Image 1 (cartoon, rainbow, N blue to C red):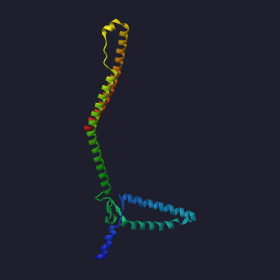
Image 2 (tube, rainbow, N blue to C red):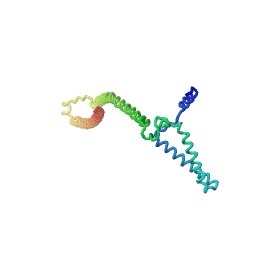
Image 3 (cartoon, rainbow, N blue to C red):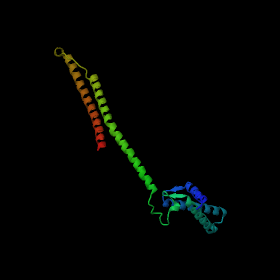
Image 4 (cartoon, one colour):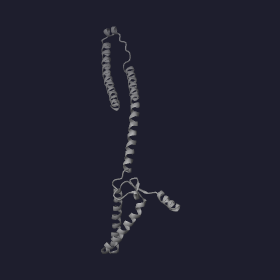
Length: 205
């Protein structure tokens, strides 16, 4: 083979090819082209008023389409291989499935992302829970200091003054109510913390 011929062949091989995933896709493309070209032919014949000559024109159209498909084959790359590299009857038995290979790599990449997200949550959530518990305890201390200040009750004065005794009783009742509300609020916070802890345990399993 001459150097000129080899150079020409290399130039042809370097030309970009149209990539198609499967032969079924190629057959579907051919079918769509035929349907569209026949629809265009019918519209043109109807416009000219010569629909009765459709069979004649259709034969020429089919020849044109088949010729176009043959010219396209050297420029096609199907399932990762050049169309011209396939043998007759090999269309459904290719050893390398490019589209499947792409899907496998895509799933592998998605799995790596999920693993990274899980690892990040496992590192971050425990510290978030610790911070949450610290905030809850700090808020509880502030709440207790503001709602339950130290009270010095003079029992002797209480015994001597019934009005003072009534006032103290009322204050104690109010304190009991506030304590009940505080306990309910604290129980709600503990429940939220318990839910967070369960989520952490589920991630670790």
